[in-house]
Image (cartoon, rainbow, N blue to C red; front, side, top):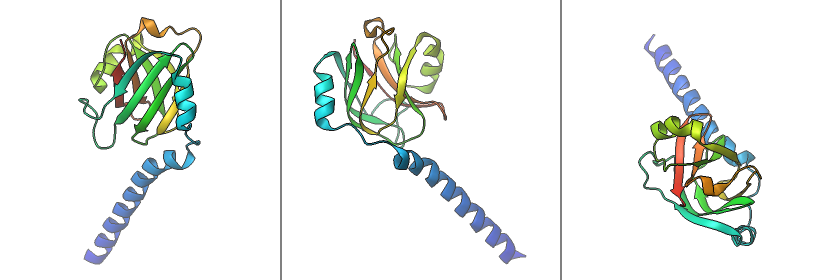
Length: 156
């Protein structure tokens, strides 16, 4: 009886660990190639605003963080740096600075979702023509699937 219980427990733990590892690894495995430093630099030259993603924000932690320079232009938002890998990242613009899940949820109706973030080292996300970045002050990376704050930067 003890041996059966121990086997069931170890198999359940192994399955849970495998599932968690799969959730973490799958976005890395299916991510498209990141834009090169040259592509990012070329896109960033037309930026109207710049800011820094930092690891030390309130709801950033060892698994949810971003670090690097983000440039906001009329046609694209460009990031040169690194994000913690994860699924279903979205890029938002907010009228107020956000660094917690609670603040994000409170302000989400006033934000605009710019697009998907599919790479974890550097990205270029086209800015829809209908979005005026000067109407906002903060750029945010958010995990939609798990309602998880990743990072944010105030640019105005």
